Length: 104
Image (tube, rainbow, N blue to C red; front, side):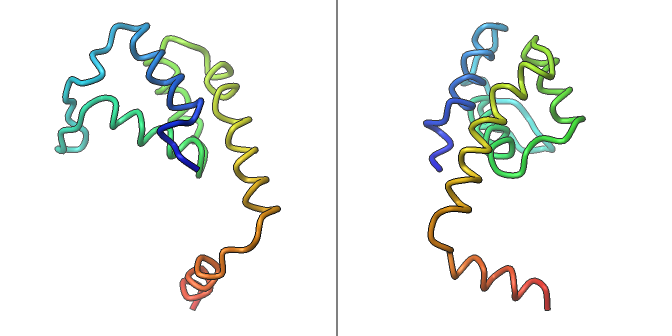
């Protein structure tokens, strides 16, 4: 999945602009500076792969000025679509091997 071309990431960029964020402005996150658009890319990646926790959903929704339900409506369908494609596609044997190694 190409996160940068995902609907979720594009929506996050649009919402950031709507609330007046300068997406190229550097923001410090845990002592590391990064442009806001890169931080949003990270959030989109988390949303589309692992999903957001209730606390993360609440924080992002507040920042974007939307409800938690609106935020979930943006990323959950795309996340489900990605998961189904992964489940129905050929298995990634290297990934399976890594997971088995982690269990030892």
